Image (cartoon, rainbow, N blue to C red; front, side, top):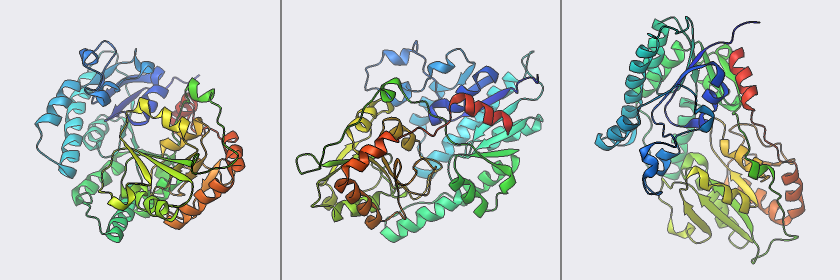
Length: 396
């Protein structure tokens, strides 16, 4: 029986709830991440509202793993830097790579360090890390978090169409990304849409592996039973949930226009997420603007909604689709993301991301609550289990 590969995972942020290092736990030399707050950390003695997001940077599955982190340095870095926008993002990415490279230098000096580990790092914060790994002869895998520069073109067109100012990434950002792609032995994406987008900008198809997101439903969601009224009315409207960043890329403009079309229908829109664009006053009455909530606070909205709306212009996958399905919540989804929805089985796939397409899908739900019941019963989590993810990773 062949020995299992050994892995080093480098992760800026808590992407996918640390699914990659969790799946590789038994093979993990180290997880190197920017912040890690254990239950014993002094940060957890602060009042609950203080540093809430930072204090979520932990996972019990990795409690016994070797985790290298720079939590205190991260706080200092974020407070001290005077940059905004892309300069701030790039500065943070460079900071993480510099700290990670130093950690790798120490780790590979350990007496029991394996000869040929595989290094995994996520895009845009991986260049110096990959350079170091290749200098050591290690195998390298780049986790591509989005559809790359092709997505940026789509988003730029949307901003020009809506006459909204937006700053694309500087040219050297994409130059660094292309070098990351060149240094990586394999590039891992989460959807066929991402694979197609990368190929459109010159990344070879035979270098790309499509591996869907891993997702583990909670016990509460597995036991949840969803019900619908016989008819929707002004007293009991259809509750449409949008959960994510309130930005044009996520299709928020088309959603707002759809809400205007449906202004006289028994429909209620809930918008949960950080608002990063200015919303015209005319759209502030029909919609319930809930704002950003911590990860642990999203469950109540999945439970109370009737349908989940995911009208993204482009996404690497869209984890919220899996979360919604785990709560037996039918999904109205864009075709430009991970394939979770099977049209007219567990939800509706939009023919296009437009106000009319969204409004028609929602009208259908209003008029056919019995079909929503069928969709809810057919809801399924198409995300990988951690053991399936481990198998995929070891096979690439």
